[in-house]
Length: 323
Image (cartoon, helix red, strand yellow):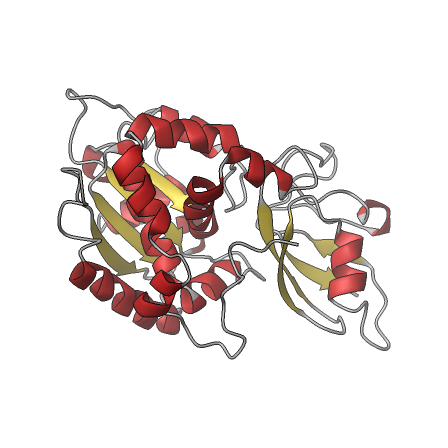
């Protein structure tokens, strides 16, 4: 079973920084697209892969990108914003990735910037994620020193600048326009739509806001292609998913598994079942904005397309088990 997002994470919780990241194939896909692919080719490959947002909504990433104005008359600057606020109760998947593999996020953001001709990026990070902040700060500095940030990439005129912003902390910042308001120094309240951020976003400019896990997928899609990405999944939605379980189970934790894995497999095989003395009564599949699932729902594929309307949606995929 392939686990592209987590295959190189250290079991002891330490991070891999630039030297190790490059030695294990890091920034290879960035070099590939900047020397052999036009921005429109990157956009097309993302669309073909079927990548969907991993923050809870599951909106197709390629479709989201298609609304960003392109061409010489497009308004500049454009922005790429990584939503690392991760305020959904029980959710910790993005923290695992940022703490263990900070350059994966840096590379994914540069690639998104190249695809959309957006030369400025912001990581909007949950304020309590101090270790993530330390490691991302180091990774960003290393990327500047190595020439991946702050200067034209080889063979192109494109350069990307990246900034880290720690959130003051508010649940509503999970909504992209509330996040944009907070990043501008305003009160974090959602904006009326339309206009959508893809055309009128941060400081009135075209902006893409993507979940952290979504951005981590980009280098692997560019390296291996859309067909490979579809094969990782058990359903029509491509790729793997960072799943997690908390609650009274034998082995709470996280696992990168094929998208479409069932809750029963997660609970019984990976989390070891309910802890002694605990009886399963239900679960929240991915945050308080998702509906409760009970015993009869345990064999549903955990993806973005298989949930019936009365069950709701996957959300973040990090479950709270109730007993």
